[in-house]
Length: 198
Image: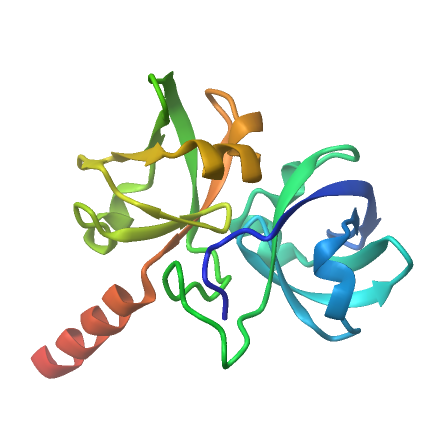
């Protein structure tokens, strides 16, 4: 489990094909402090398992199923990624509950630079509309954000300067694909209500 508060921007050093998936070798510094083989780490919001550690890099594997639901297959050597280690039991929960289980991807429709912030509009598949609410939580590439505007097929978020500078949002452009994870609480409520109606 994660909080959606990005700890560090990492760099993809290599992307090695493995069957229909990839091994990603990522350089970092802060997140390496207490990583171990088998540790969970969020890479652009996707929960992956550390399979190798070296002095300045760690390796994870993105299997075919993961690539179907995320933007990890689009990563290239030299690209940047958001990184967050898994939540410790005694840590403050500053964002919201983020599992690292990506639901789908969205497309950036527009990026506006305002006087002291940025405003991004993102499309999403209509079948996920029930999981979004005005001023509700959503994880975008692993970043916990608040829905500022909402329609049937897109939503917008406002990004403060700190978040803009400390995540890969600052590298994004119109047309880019982003990973979306909807609030898990809404999914559980939906399942409970369906079970009651059955």
